[in-house]
Length: 148
Image 1: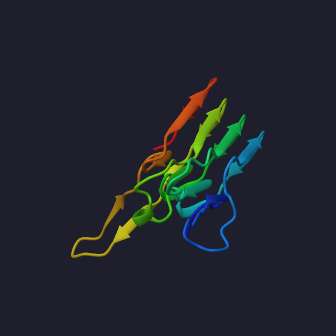
Image 2: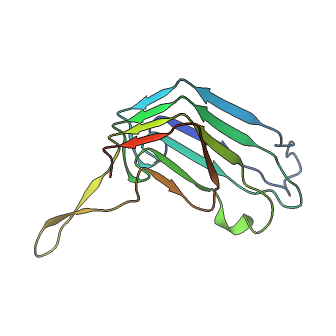
């Protein structure tokens, strides 16, 4: 379903008796290429997290000098970022995501064929990067070229 190349998530349940502390995680992807992947969500990369009630998790994800090229998805042709379980995000903090010196080249939304009286191709989905509630920080020189 999501993350044709990479699927990263922080899934936290505060009320579960065996929950381990899920804080201060720092995930780094450096000099990576996500090329010719496809998925419903996040053709190259899918990131998700739940918020934790009553505490700050201080989790971070950094993509440094990474490239997404020729990925396809219905939502977020290169990257899709969203909370995982919508009913538990009322309090807490989402992870910090930074894209540093990254390239996004020729990533496209998937075309969906809808059968009706008149058949037609409809392009739906949302751009190269789709985020729902997640903050994204861009640093350095990030390039977006030839996508839709």
